[in-house]
Every structure is written in C-alpha cells, then in structure tokens.
Image (cartoon, rainbow, N blue to C red; front, side, top):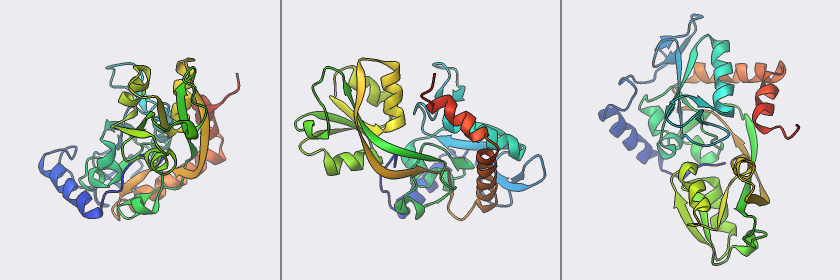
Length: 275
C-alpha cells in the first residue's frame, strides 16, 4: 500500500530537525555510514552497536503487531523477515513504534530515530525523492471490506456511505479517485480504523488486501467484496543517501532468503491459504 501522504521534502527536513531537537532520535545519534559496526565487523552505520533498529507504524496486522496487548513484543511478516535478515547480518533486530507520516516522509530516518523503516510501505516515485528503498519484498492489492449484511457489493455501491481510509495511504488515494459519492473518513492507523467499522462509525474500509483479509479471517461478520490491482510493491526504507552499505546488505540477504526457501516459509506463515 502506499500507506501514506505526499509530504514535501522540505517538510521532511523540518520534521527531522524537530525530532532531533526534541530528543526523539533514539539516543541522539545521527545515522551515518561511519557508525556502529555489526558483530561480523562490517560497518552498517547502526545507531546502536549490534542492533538493527527498525521504525514501524504498529499495529498493521499481519505485517507488524503486538503478540499480545501491552507486551511490547512484536511479530508479523515484516518483523519475522527482518529478524531473519538481521540474523544473517549478525545483529539483533529491534522494532520501534513510529508514526507513518514521519517515516514515509523520511523525517524519522533523517533524524536518526532508526536505521531503517519497515511498515508495509509502497515504493513510489514520490517517496523516492525523500527515501532510499530496498528491493521490493511484497506485492499487494487494494481491497474493500464491508459487513456481510451491508448490501454493499462493490465500489459503485459506496455513494453516500462513510468509507474509512488510513490517512496518506494508496488506499486513500484510490478511494479519492474511484469511490464516487462516498464520504471518506480518515484514520491515523488500522488500530482505530478497524474498530470504527466494527462499531458502525463507518460502512466500509478501503485499504491493503492482506490487512482486510486478516480482518475477514478474525471476524466472519465481515468480508472483502472487491479487490483492485494497483501494481503496488512494498520496500524497506532508508535515510536518503545515508545508509547505502546497510541497504545493499539487506538486499543481498533478502535475495538469499528467497533463494534458500526461508522467505517462502515466512510468507506461508502469514499468507498461505492451505490448511
């Protein structure tokens, strides 16, 4: 999904400066290629020695979410995949909850809040102005989730309906263009978007297919009635021009995991439809 909005690079720099001054940079370190080295001796510019710190907008099940409420322990496709990559690099992986807008704009990365971002983020030309992306690691579709007895069969039935979208996402962009006559209601993240549908505040959710399929799986009262091909591919995010050795290493290990079958095992854990 293009989970998020088009924020100008100048605003990203300003936000980065604000974060840094506010002490939100994970210890105040600025990400550079001369930072901490991994256990194997390779210099990846890590803000904390031996730890790959990853910013992520949580919850976004099944990509990243808490194992149990209040546990502070995270799981999900992105989490497992990057943990496996971190293991290959000889570092432990630590996830840090971060607002998506500060992540996709590049602000959190530029401020040194984390080494990289992993948040089911769609690779777009607009974001490439502010962020360096890894190779794509997941292909996705957009989708429409409604209550089974809603009478809504497709996007053409949304006129006059309240449709929930996550602010700044490709789902929101798609809804603006195609959900004619619908009243779009913005939410900060799926953690408030999904309860809003369950509570009757909105009539539908238009967002990434894997997330809506998870809701359908969790509650049979809801179903995905339509999907939309948008040619979206997710990538891991890095501070523009500042983490090339780490980005290269992540790409190498991502390819290795695909080649040796470990990627498929992680993928099947969260997305396989076989019983």
